[in-house]
Image (cartoon, rainbow, N blue to C red):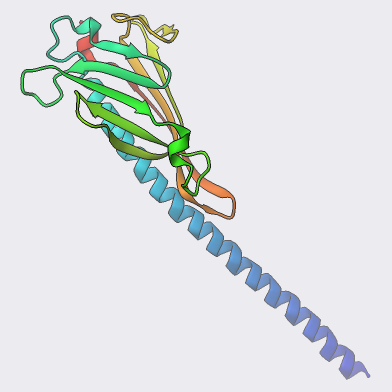
Amino acid sequence: MAVWLDILGSMVFGSLLLLSVLRLTVDMSERGTLATLAVVSQRQAAQIAGLLDTDLRRAGLGVAMPWTAVEVAEADSLRFAGDLDDDGTPDTLTYYLGPATETAGTLNPRDRYLYRRLNSEAPLRVGEGLTAFTLRYYDATGAELATPVPPGAVSQIAVQYTVENPHSQDTTYARVPMELRVVPANLNL
């Protein structure tokens, strides 16, 4: 009888040990998947930051009155003039967040697209998976300006955005918050 109790106890202990190992394997797989999704989101967020930084630093470049280069300064859109392609002629560049309705078919219910429009060309989608995008503007003293900002008041531009991967691990989306603050030299002459 004692032998049967030992065998039964060993089976119970072995089963618990096997369940623990299986749960550990599942947890490691889920964390690995989420880490991979986070890397993809980080890459997307970094690409957006690089593009915004490059473009915003050129605001007012080659413009006759550079302090008036920022034409539209709202919480979710920005239009400014600057010589973006070094051809001696100022270009007009617009950034704006697309409507939520155009991403209704994506896997992430909160994501939206970021658009960049150069002059009168068709807008280009330069960012995907944005779930938040806010522009803030500051004057020469560093004081925040209320939007919409009148032309000629902007000296600094701050961008806050969050990128989420379109794929989720269960219901968790890998999210990367970013913040960028640019002081275009041409707006502070």
